[in-house]
Image (cartoon, rainbow over all chains, first blue to last red; front, side, top):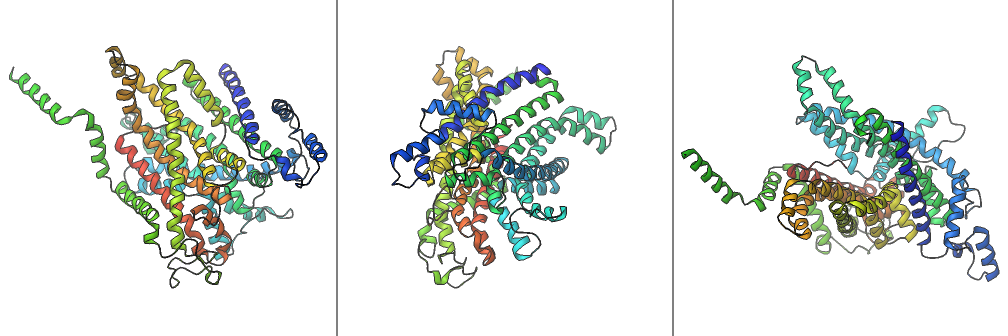
Length: 312
Length: 301
């Protein structure tokens, strides 16, 4: 087991290296020099050179990459071109806000999805199956940014139940904060609900078709204990997908965050794109991708811990 | 003796009627014809495509013509049965024309990625060894990015525009299509009939064309259909962020964004472009489900 974990960790190193290379290259295929946007067109060549030197844009590309990588490894992502503040501080605050949303949306979406999937599988072919499958398919088909707008429309415009956007003020109470979370978490939980619901149904149906289930029923077990056996057997693949989905929630919350003006990492990325703030853009993408790789790794190891057959 | 005669005659008759080459697809067609959901969904999709293609005929005006005097008319307003947008342009007309770019942004990236990813996956799965390692390890790197993040990052860097959004999405869809083609190809390659074809002297190309591709195509197409749904959502999302199609071009994502601030004035009109994105992506998802069960495909991706 330990050996497997170490081997899996070593496999993640070249992937992370590749990720850093892709993120760095991404910025440099961009048309236009980031410096052009910082300075007025009539700036003298000396000033251009000076600003380039400040941000390190004057060195050859591979030197820039190595410097950036060395600094990034120590947690130093430079300063924002837009507001000259250290990138790391802004990124950490934004990531915290995104994690709050992602964790709550994951809890809600996963529990709803498992409930839908198991109900559908147990009532295979009958109306509860059709209803639950339809809800789950709606979850994966609905654009979550549109769902967010519809939620705002319903709960904040037509009825003034909940705040339409933004994050709580610092003085807000616990319940006051919850009010700000309901709509974004609801919108974000749709995709995980649909994906996990559909996958749980398929996995549970596969387990139900195996012979040991008939054997359990023949032995005289009632529905409850049989369900427990089914869950245990369906759990590993569903858990693995949950890990991936959590990663998608972290990296894919940008659209919903934009609708709610939620100051998370997606919103920060959006701002960085429109301000051409290269250091923030690079740092946000690389850190989110880093989390995603680590999540995949944890999922693989956890799966191997549950099911020894996977420790190849 | 009579038994064997009868059974061999039966086999011959069965062979004569079965026509193995088309049998599988004929069965798929029969199963699809018996599936009411898939039929209904295909009809709706055909309707949406028809409206988009023949937009000048079915719409009631010009997509760019509008007057601020008539802005944000409600649903059912005289002359504008679905109301007007923030520029006073007829919403029904713009929804019809908007379907063109939105549907293309769903279909082009998946088709492009299918060519590239499918080709790479076939190579990796069929040849194996070092070729497989190189291709699949490169794909692993792109797999390390959540798809929305990668699409937004690429598009954000390239700048906005329909072409850049399509390019970004094509890049995003190559890794999953490569991976699934590789998996199915590697599974097929190990089957006995491929071995038999190779042993009887078929060239690599012949084996690939007649035996591998025929078995790989079904599962990959099913998966690609479900990706079209994702592609429509993501491309509209890019435009929604201001990264894809630019206003005033009609496209559902751009229209949704432009009408976002109008939800306080005309809430139902403002929700319509999103409803189109939702309906189209739902249709593609349900069609993929229908194809999957008709083709009896098991996908674990």
